Length: 365
Image (cartoon, rainbow, N blue to C red; front, side, top):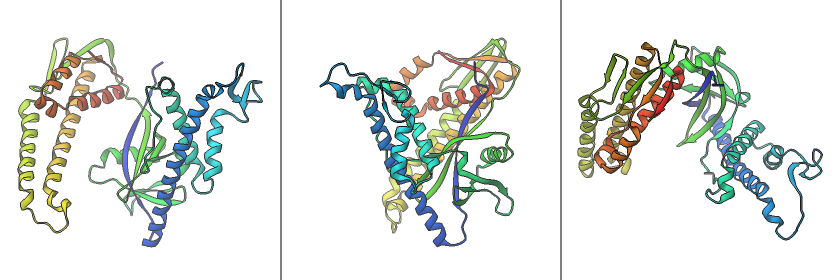
């Protein structure tokens, strides 16, 4: 049965909500300590899971050995003194208890066990190596780690305690989507599932996973909309007698090429730029144009995909087919210009998300 809910991840910056610099520094140091313990615990968990799974290989000197990776109280051939899930949790809990909230360890353990079981056949055949975690990894938690979530009108931010650390959100300029999701979370209209905290360049980011009900529209599965993606028109879609061309070459490609030309001129002029703070200052213009291109393309693709889904909803099309996509992808790989400026993998990703949210079945031909 198809799920009636879907999940959406949003990146939200957090600021430590304490009055003095010393208190903020102490709180941030605590977060970095939790990240370090999570990194060490993750490597321990996958190592123990692999040993448990491959334990049969360690019995090559004996014959007739019978074993099961279950609690010995539940099966006479069991070789564990607790449940298998609890074995790895106890390993990391005994080692790091008191240094990091147990909620983080529990969520980390569940996440890695799920991931390990998914990739287990490839580990067994030697086609995949074990995960090796980086020191700057994000660490997981669930709603138990958030206390007192509310909107503070004076601070114009959502405030809560992340375990024992008071924090507030900074939503930036493009805050409408995030503000609405956080507001719905405060009102209990949607739920937040296992999310992550990411520490990067001295900043704190919440990778929040929201779960909400899919949109309900009057759609007919037998009504099929056929769409094609190309450089001439980013999207052309038709169903029955209705047809729509979304975007033009001049609107999308030429504007992107103009930004790339400006970036090239900035790159040529880098050596003449004023120095004083090293590479970052001299390449400031280049960074600005790269961000401009990325933001322009991302915005246009959101607009195109939204228009496509709105067309399907208006015509009650319950099925959306993207025609000849595999063939076009192969052609694009052979042409550097098309590969550099096509961006239709991102467009398909956005179409897939919006189609799932609207309850439309997507078929890629």
